[in-house]
Length: 289
Image 1 (cartoon, rainbow, N blue to C red):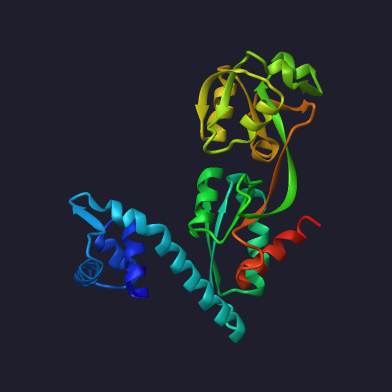
Image 2: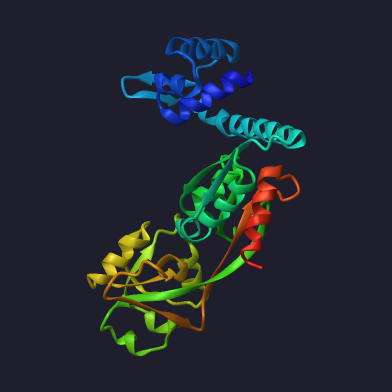
């Protein structure tokens, strides 16, 4: 499998059709078909199943995908390194991030970066922790902004301790408190963040051995706040999520004892990070000095 075939293969996976993959890579649809047919003949098994709905990976194709992504990423890193040595400073940085980090941290950092290196592009993907970590592992992302990973194979640089707070409608009994005893959440109707999207709330509750009555689970923080507003239950959310976006008639308080999620930079390896990633990390870290 050569690099042209890798590029087309990944474009089909991303876009879902041979036609769209051709538009993305600059090849005609017939050329894409020829390249994939030649590749499948070369390796001895089909990679895609085509239908009027588009192109879907076969099981064999799914097995190859992580390795192809890793090789393609390594090739881009090599090209970026060569460009850096030449002083061209061209390339793309793929970032996986929590939405809260994307909103509060990335705009000024990207703006400063592009003032110095205007030929660098950014691909920012907001997602939950599980998908972000998976993206780092399969090299879809060069760098991530998320909470501390459980995977010790990844490098983590702590930047910020973000308080986890309790969220409730105005007029609730918690309104009278400066802090809310976390054990008062025991047995109360509760709107829980989906553990695959964000496990920080689950971690905090487990650490304190508190078991609220979970009535709704959601992956969207703003949906959670809307449900709190309607009186469906209370919730816990990171302060960075709601600091500037709390709804009218929704309040929040810090917990007692105080609870936090630790946010920071995650990369597959600091030592092996490419020049673009390293420079981005340096600029980002200056904002927390």
